[in-house]
Image (tube, rainbow, N blue to C red; front, side, top):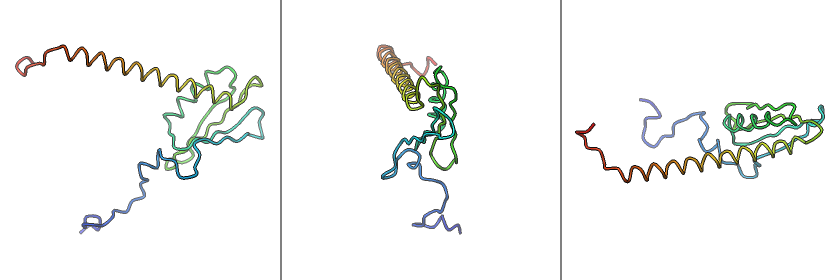
Length: 139
């Protein structure tokens, strides 16, 4: 008989708990910044509890900024929910300002998508409320 099948036993697994992907630990900060001492106008951002979804979106907004010379990200290990961005800018701005601008643009886009979705949902509800329900024989 399988040990995990016994009543009251806990199944052993190395799978992380789902909440580890989005809940910050006590004392853990969401974002850390370190200036890169080897390159001018360059820094590394460490973002906790995020994945490729945020990584790609923010990287894209960074690359659209003409003041950004380089922007890339990586996830050091698939079991740890951490993004590391490296951003290098021209002398016109700093990596901190470029990241702030990219995050603001991403947040504005998310708000616009949410508004569009809510409007479409409301329109759908209005149109289906007025329509008569279909009968099985009409299908």
